[in-house]
Length: 320
Image 1 (cartoon, rainbow, N blue to C red):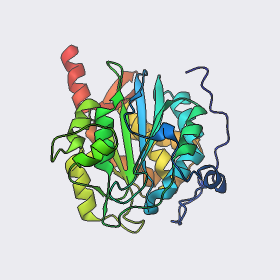
Image 2: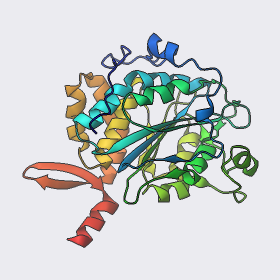
Image 3: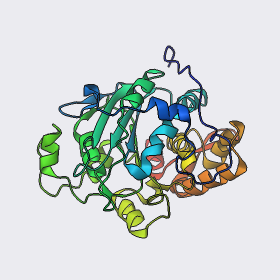
């Protein structure tokens, strides 16, 4: 990964502070000033665009930028150098790049699908800064996550043997099926009626699709929203966000565990070493417990153990 430095400060006082819910999720004034685009740069338009990664571990972060979730983009911007640096320094992934995308409501918003290219290091800032934080949404408990999923299914290219990881971050349901006229309008191509894209996307990326689910409108987890996502994804891949400011801690924990470089217990040590409070560690651990339970321990050498998925462990056993 040499040559792709991420040389800027990690902003926001939220990194090690105890949590209390706030309207801006603890985002800094710096990120508020930097993420101020009001019209979409042509390079972020999805029409006919295909994003490609040549790395072993591509990461895609899909940010809901409607009103109730708009500050997640700012928190991610504040902490992206830490996120990137921890992956490198702790060895969670050996070869990775990141694409930042945004989603809204294709029935109501001007920019419901925004697609950044895969990038490394400080170049990621320029893609985040192009995102329009529209702050819209239809107000009916659904956003166009399914349209973003269909785009990622059809318009991403990875090298053979790669292990992509996709994070959706939001608080509502997707629409039940993809709207064919919308796929045509956004240059994704026509699709069959009533297609549900998440099952196909899961197959494309070896099931590494995660929904980081926030409380609905920041108030509480709605059972119908949770059950919808657990029916679309592996239930342990629906990660409830106990505190908004921990979003990067959650993504790092997921990456470290599914890459088999950490168990939940050893990831807790990493959080402590980077100055997180005991409350933050407890909240993140509670959110990741289901994923941890679904993974199985793997002995590396001596007393060192980590985790891997049961499917991968089964495949490993067949090879031995």
